[in-house]
Image (tube, rainbow, N blue to C red):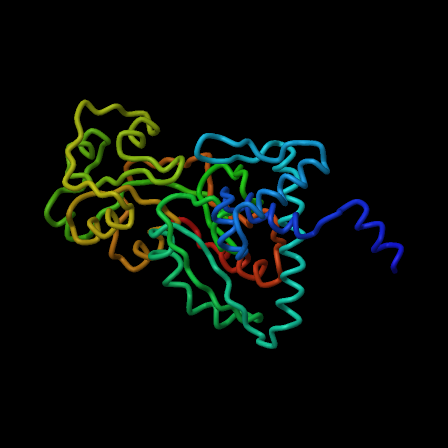
Length: 306
């Protein structure tokens, strides 16, 4: 046993240096790492410099007002972060007698509001109990800098800060409220649709489209669009459509329950199936625990697109 320990110490001369390096890499700041660790910035700098001298390579690019990992630094960080997460997980499991642990799930406001909340009651029916804390985001936060166990993202599945698992695909089509159809005649062509009051929102995730992009995707180029309302959040656009303000783009996985309840109506005029899809992303350095796997399977329990 002593021989093995001696061998590790020969290869890894300072675990303290690795701990402080991980904090700097995760927070992208020597100052923030020092505050988190309760030491001085100079002490953190010495530990990182010691690692660089030991490894004979630069781990960070020192920029004017920021730092960035080099390719060698990135390789070391991924391994160190994963190892520390595993160690922390064992300590947490051994020291915590509670059977239920809180899982932090990050998603957009729309996904959280329209897909997660209506389904949270189903968590109680799972064989493995889950306690979920929702972290609502408007943009993808770097998972290396936030305390998140699992994130739901829309895109191509390729992100540098985590490992992606396919969740489900998507389809985009026009939706409105029944009251809107009492006020305006239902359009029968794309040209008629373009002349009606539309509700739009700013794109927040790569691949989320607005009306102009959607019309182009379905092969129609209107000369002019009439907007009844524009909002910064897609969730607000859905609410506006629910209250009869105009026609919104319906992302099928988001508005499924509203279509099922009859609060929104799908207009059968054009539909677009993007190449991008929804993915569950687990931060690098964290393994997919049994609880996370249960959450992923629960999220994946999809209904047919209406």
